[in-house]
Amino acid sequence: MVKVVEDIFGIATNPFTKQAQVIRRYTMTNTNRLSVAVIQLGATIQSIQVPDAYHQLSDVVLGFDDVAGYTKYRNYHFGCTLGRVSDVVGNGEFIMDERRVVVSKNYHGQKHQINGGFVGFDQVIWDLEMKRPDGVTLRHVSPDGHEGYPGTLKVLLHFTIDDDNRFFIQIEATTSQTTPVNISNQIIFNLAGQTTGINGIFDHQINIEAMETMETSAPDELPTGRFKNVNDSVYDIRLPVFMGDRVRQFEHKPVKGYDVCFALDKEFDAIKTRYVGRFLHPDSGRYMEIFSNQPCVKLTTANCFPQEPLGEPPILGKRCTRYWQHCGFSLQLLNYPDAVNQPDFPRIFINPGELYFHETIYHFGVQESWKCCADPEELEALGEEPLRKPMA
Picture 1 (cartoon, rainbow, N blue to C red):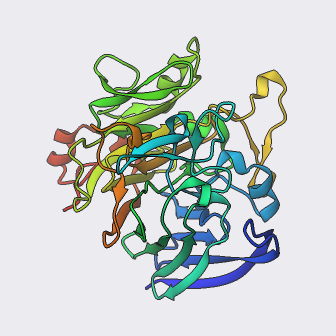
Picture 2: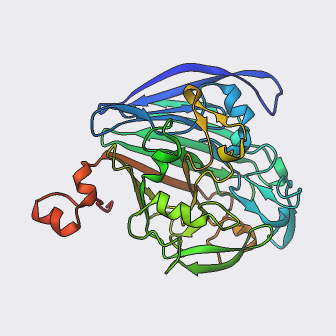
Picture 3: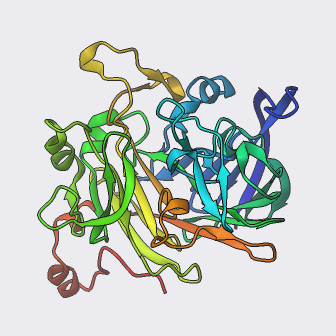
């Protein structure tokens, strides 16, 4: 049985009305003590509390204890919802219905757009549509012409948990005119606990079942429309590897960690929710399996966070935790970036009468530490379940 509790998280300025507005938090808790807290500002995942193998609870999401933190560090997008179009729109324009659409440009010297423009979904104060027995639904109506996008877009975000320790993010959107839609959420995780920093992150075993990454071009890192095979590269994580071993291989590269889009499914079918990958922290036993109907997952490892060896001031997070480079990893499930300008990418436009639907599921669990070192044959001989069970 799930319990939903509402409280006041703080006050923020509404970017549309310019008036101060109360920000409410909705905390969902199941019978296993898994809890997920969502705040209205940016439809942000503020906290996920997960028990470990020793029944100790830890918050596994980086973020802040007050509105001021989310406002000060808004460019890092801690846990928030991104849209209308997540990631980049090359040159801030695209061709739609044989006409050129120009949107706002807020990226790389105002050459491109990123994450919906100057006032994207991450800065919106979302309305409560419904408080449900197993979660909450938030609503936002994006007006026609906002940040340059045509059509009034009505968006519903359904946040749900169940007693199987699954956290569901389901996004629905409809439009009054043809328009591009690519909504995602950027949760920054540390399954060791948000206070454990780089040491906790580097101990993670990670696995994403993708054979290709999306190719980008310098200097602006725009998608080329082509893909690279992961064979014999640092991006081949089809089998579990340690995060620290892989991130250290970026030491002499321009980007100091993962910042890459993995191609999951080029034949995009929103009806199918498929397995994406698994992240495990062996010492605590916490693991997280990811399922989604989106064709792409973007993995980043907090590369742009302040660097402690350089004496840069840290980001002060929850419980006064100092966040430094590589102290978390983020996962965005989304359609391919710049799909508006790449005809071979999965379709990103919706028409009036069509429904945009995004589903991502995070399944949390506890793995006994000895299983982390056992191969599938040993587990089978002992009558134990494999480390991963595909979702039906």
